Length: 400
Image (cartoon, rainbow, N blue to C red; front, side, top):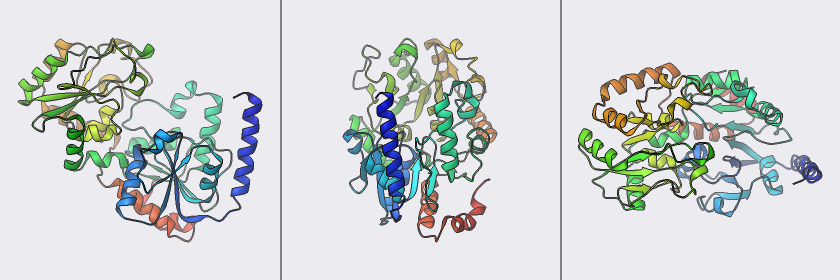
């Protein structure tokens, strides 16, 4: 799109914002955006599931980029194309907005609309926003400041994230430190989810699952993914006394790259295209990760997390992390020999001790009911006379 087209589109959207601001608010409507138009996922998925579980009469609009994303939604959630004229109508006439990324909006929301920002990262991993300002372009910084001004409430999963919002997100409003809704599934009994995953991949129920979830490398290289899976399975059986199936869950950036990993469909299975990573985390007994925040998500279950990092020296002094690589509580290996030693000598008590110290350090919130608590707030707001009264009634729940 050339600059003239962009300017014309911007002017058109601005006129729509002005027009639809004159329409009455629908007091039972909420609009959700997930990663700029992705389908069902992240924190909003679990908020919506809780709303539907309560059989509320709330009208839920989910903004999607295309028909494929639309197909991920429950039948009673209405889809709308992200950044379309109709999406502007829904945004300007809904009572609540929910998002996990910055919004690219020109206009501010209306007086009695509530914008809840759940964000998408956690676990004190990569530096972001003001803490990575040298990597942000001027357009993003301008958008982030406008979005922060628009935001009414942020959802936090730890004291660390709460402080980060207030110091690095251009945000000075209230924070609800209730935990991330997407973590709920990791902290509950998930027999139904377990059956779903085992049946999906046709795995025998007497076998345990190992989730191997490496992040992508520059140039889409598979060089660092050199785990000997058969050796890994033998060592896990020797240490833990169980048979294991390995689910390989690659980053979306390399999901379609050929020639990387050999799958046998029986003991080493490609799970990259499974629609909900949180469900795979929930039912797996052990994680092999590397540098991503999935390590933290998985460790909330207090189950073993190993990091396989054959290219560690390239990352050890990475200043993009909030803590040094060695400060995170997850044991690591740089080759298959070290991984074998790590597994065979794994001390679960020591691991849990280190994990607890890290959770304490960042003030982690392990709350299996955060979805319900966020939904309670949403329903309370929808039933409230105005936003000022809502915040006055709930001031003791929030951190300012």
